[in-house]
Length: 227
Image (cartoon, rainbow, N blue to C red; front, top):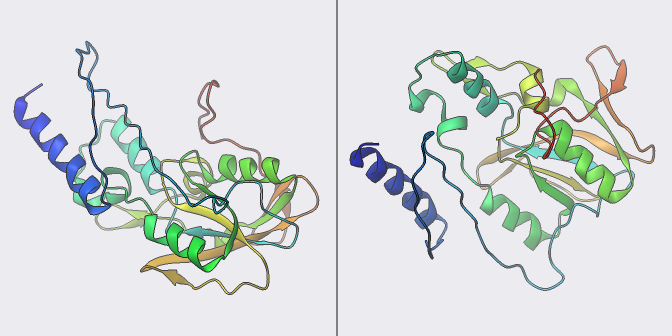
């Protein structure tokens, strides 16, 4: 591995860390026969009793997501197909940005009743919230914001937004009497459904027909699904 590549990788990592006032506090290096592996652990804190957990959703709560979904997974599929891509045209995959400011706003304003990041895919991470909260959800497919990638930009298929993962956007719920802004810290916030008493996650298409939305994103200790 050329030293120039290593220098650029570290430079990019530290640039992102510095923008969120995160210190590189240690590390270890070793040889790898099969490419570059970077395992990063982030340690932080939250005021006592103020953590927004997965278990706070209640029937009637509205379901929201930040940003647009599916861009990272769709880009990864292109890379696996052998395509050479210009990183600037595929920022969802090459330059993901943690939604720290959005999360802090939701905490300070007391808006979110439950929250999780969308690293494993909407279908899987929404299931996590529903299981921890003992509820279900109804999601409207036409309202899900699908990312656009490439140049010229093209919107990704819904399946990537539902199951792709690696978006690192936020999925959260809020009580129906809470006013959630359409943008927070400049980031789009979209209501995509609501929480139900029935402990199933239902996806409603544009024709009004509903079907069970099973978790098909990343699940640890299981073989990755193909969509």
